Image (cartoon, rainbow, N blue to C red; front, side, top):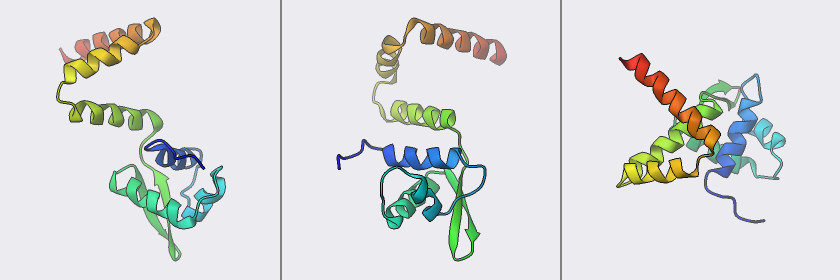
Length: 121
C-alpha cells in the first residue's frame, strides 16, 4: 500500500463524520472507510483530531462516539492559516498562492475582500 499524503487519513475520517447525522464510534468509522484499517489506527487518528479541536467525543457505553465540530471549509481555512503562520514571509506565500488562482477564484477573493473591508469600516 502506498503511503498516504500527510493529513489524508484525518481528512478521510472527517469526511465519514461529515456524512453522518449522528456521532460515530471508531468501529463504525472503520467500517465506512474504503481502506482496511485497524481499529486502533482509527482510534489513534480520532485522538489526534480531538487534540486539534476538530472533533468532540461523548461516552457511548464502553467506547466513545465522535462528531466533527468543524466543516470542510473551516478545516481548509485553518490549514491555510497554519501555513501562513509557519512561514517566515507571509507576503511571499500569499503572492505565490494568488498567482495559482484561476481568474474566477481571483475575482471571488477580490469580492470577498471588498465585502470584508466594507463590513469593517
